[in-house]
Amino acid sequence: MAAPALTFLRRLCWRSLCEARQAQAVCIPAVHLHMTTATMQVSQKDFEKAQEQLKLLKKDPGNETKLKLYALFKQATEGPCNSPKPGMLDFVKKAKWDAWNSLGNLSQDNARQKYTELVSSLISAESAGQTKDASPEESRHDGYETIIVTTKNNITKIMFNRPERKNAINHQMYREIIKALQEAGKDDSTIAVITGNGEYYTSGNDLNNFANVQPNDMEKMAKDGAELLKEFVSCFIDFPKPLIAVVNGPAIGISVTLLGLCDIVYASDRATFHTPFSQLGQSPEGCSSYLFPKIMGLAKANEMLLFNKKLTAAEACAWGLVTEVFPDGTFQKEVWERLKAYASLPKNSLAVSKQLLRSMEKEKLHAVNSQECEVLKERWLSDECLNAIVSFFQRKSKL
Ligand SMILES: CCCCCC/C=C/C(=O)SCCNC(=O)CCNC(=O)[C@H](O)C(C)(C)COP(=O)(O)OP(=O)(O)OC[C@H]1O[C@@H](n2cnc3c(N)ncnc32)[C@H](O)[C@@H]1OP(=O)(O)O
Figure 1 (cartoon, helix red, strand yellow):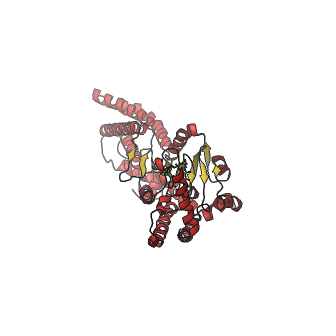
Figure 2 (tube, rainbow, N blue to C red; figure 1 turned 45 degrees about the horizontal axis):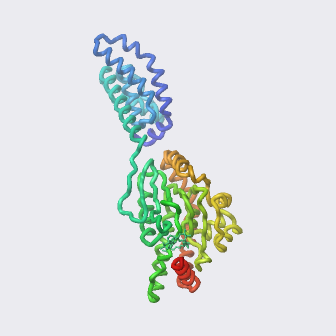
């Protein structure tokens, strides 16, 4: 069918089509009077039942099917197409006329039969789909060790999964998250969610990423780290569909800065938000040096990014970093119910809308990301940073 015709047909509300058919059905008893054999009477009964069943369909079966139903109904009740051909620009009438006319001399009995069969197949397909919808399978994606990636209810969930290390992000986890985001961007899901397994959302960069590096390899470590970080953050900047952070517990470092690149942030009231960059002799990343002042204003961004102020969930919400805070006891239930409803919205509409909201900033964000990675590359080679890492591990070993 021609694209303009389809576009116009999309304007046809499914319910109004059903109602139109109901109104047309008034003429059916007249058809019924012409039938004589018992078989035909049964067929007529089935035909009427099919019309009733059609009204119960919840999902719009699509334009092609609607046209087929329309044509079969007309053929069954009025016989071969007998109305004048509509003008080329009357797209809807023309499409309907074409569909009816394409049935040629199909007998009314056959048309009734085909109509009834088509409705029956739609009803069976919908009830099979509904059973599936009621308890859809959660599919787990293969090939990940540090994260768990699943898809259910049109939501791809990426879960940090090193709970015994407070979900600290080691090099392998950075790479796996990159891969998971690239796949989630292309899969059939409507939205993607990032969350943590266990008590923490994540404690940020695994400080072991800096451990056991020989003095001669320091520069290479810093260079490779900056490249990995740049690629990692780029995946968040470019992510093409709504990306939601479900912050189940404390969040530290890079996991906090990335929230500025997420489209919605839901937090448990147990969550805290901490970016101890200066304490670690480091500097902000995840585009936070640009996005945090925009989100919360420079004065508050300074408290977080320069002076390591740890925010409660309520503060983070008041400062605009978090969308909504939920009591921890009902957090998972409330959030996933909400997300399930969001993920049933039209997928493409959400994707293009997200891209519109972000597109003006994309180039800027990539430039900020590059600059932040360059600065960090230097920071990682600084005494301030090395001393901070050493003192973290010394503190740990004394405990
Ligand atoms: C490619 C490189 C990209 C770099 C990007 C730049 C990113 C920057 C950042 O993210 S900065 C933030 C870095 N994170 C931290 O500074 C947090 C460090 N961890 C802690 O302060 C604490 O562990 C804690 C507050 C998260 C939890 O404290 P506590 O409740 O007392 O638990 P433990 O400390 O006993 O933790 C259990 C176990 O996990 C280890 N661990 C936790 N987080 C990290 C981490 N981020 N790095 C390394 N190890 C971590 C902790 O050492 C314990 O291990 P142990 O049992 O002692 O072997």
